[in-house]
Image (cartoon, rainbow, N blue to C red; front, side):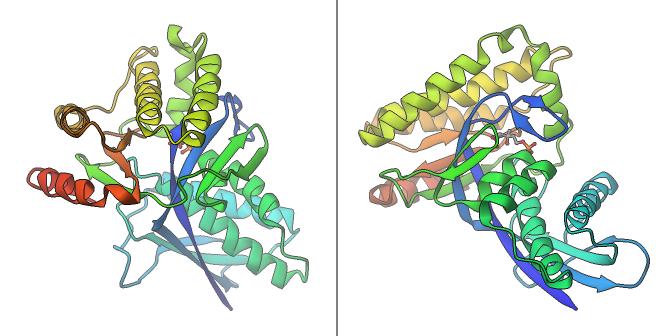
Length: 314
Ligand code: PMV
């Protein structure tokens, strides 16, 4: 018996960074994200009598063959085990997974893959144990325990996560164009899970919750008033705030490369020259995410062409 499901990635504009309870991934502050419906993870489960769970890369035309580290495989198997416990199920599975985008380079592959694993496992386990399929709110809650940011991938286009509540928010920008300027595709030296644990050692962590919460309120207001420039300023401040926490942690760590700075500078020039431009943000990685309004399509295409002279743009 086999089951297959998929889930999208998401990009946070107000970031989840820091946990009040690491055992269940409860965040120190609320976060808001835009769901990236084109960046997908696929997970297949096959029931096996092998006596243990195992992981393999999924073979699909739309996915590169995923090379998941041993730690990555163990994290995935551990989450499946946690889901099996919820259903009191003792059997085993072969997990096959992959993404239609590069993994482990700050493109939130863990958000998409844990959401997809949770979805497919809930379907398989509900069927095998003849129980009701959990509601989306429940699935998001279960998924959060595997990877915090994955709980936001259950809602589209906008998702607000505060403490243990995850929900969609209605905003005037339901459809945005998303680009990622990939300046580095190598695996990260400091994994996000370690970053969460290390940021409280920064002296800038004092006041972080208040800053993030105030920015969230201001961002929602800016969106409601369709003040795109103000939204750009807020999201710019927010990713710098997160990266400043990284650089001032003890010991410090960071993800920016010379190319990251060059891309950010280029986006600043777009805004100066056109009095308009994309929302700019970064995850825990060197790559730069851009979000454009649909009416900015021509400027988005032109910027993409310029960026493609030097970088890979997804
Ligand atoms: O879900 P995690 O533990 O991989 O954390 C994700 C953290 C960031 O991507 C850096 C920010 C966010 O809110 O997605």
